[in-house]
Length: 312
Image (cartoon, rainbow, N blue to C red; front, side, top):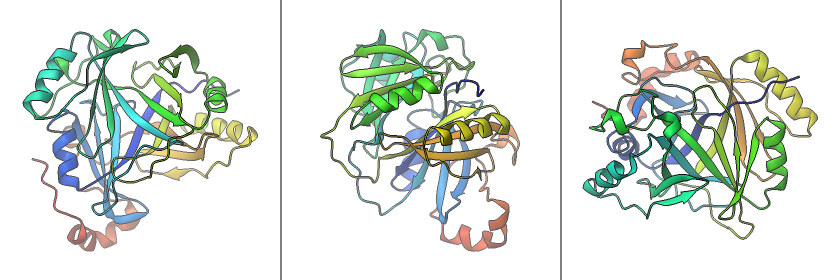
């Protein structure tokens, strides 16, 4: 029997130009830039990774920066918000920082007992900074001038907008997640990852939401499993549930399987192994362009065609 899936692994979205993306996520949100690689299916597009200082699963947000993509609008069948966990009492710090940086925020509100500070990133993607006392003792480093004490620890969770939440809730329950009830039109499900990161998924029924995929849209969300054995067990279980599951895909830093859940959201199940330091020292994460082995012979052409990205 497959063990429960505990927490989110990463979230992948589409952005505009890579330099603007870097300036927001590294220099304004204060995340660590942990990997500069390429879209394995589109080698002349970057795949950029940001996370906490330790580059942990449950903290990594990744982007495909497509420079000429149309602006996205939230749509049903998509994840429509990224929630970040900061220590309790940190929201005033973030309000002041965002004001100083010229970033507009909404009013702080409470949901399921947690205070949320809403904003959008430079591409219009919804973000919520959530004060979570459970990460108070989780150490990290703030980048871009962010105080370590108040820095983002990783994901709090995500919100899925769906035509109907019933079958998605059933799937999360099968995955070992627990219903936390309903509030403000949302149904929350929780997990218990050891890292305390990425442990909430909120479901919102929005059958009349008709947007379009593009810049600022979330492409997929990934759940974490420890290794290949656990992933194989879940692949078989999900297939028996009637979902079409992809073969395992090697993403160099994790192995992945994908399927589209009943509400339309693309789900991934990713392994914690081998990790982001498999091809460069931990201290040098994100400093050089990393390519999968089969693209190394094309490095000169790829580097020449990729946009310039200043990361120092």
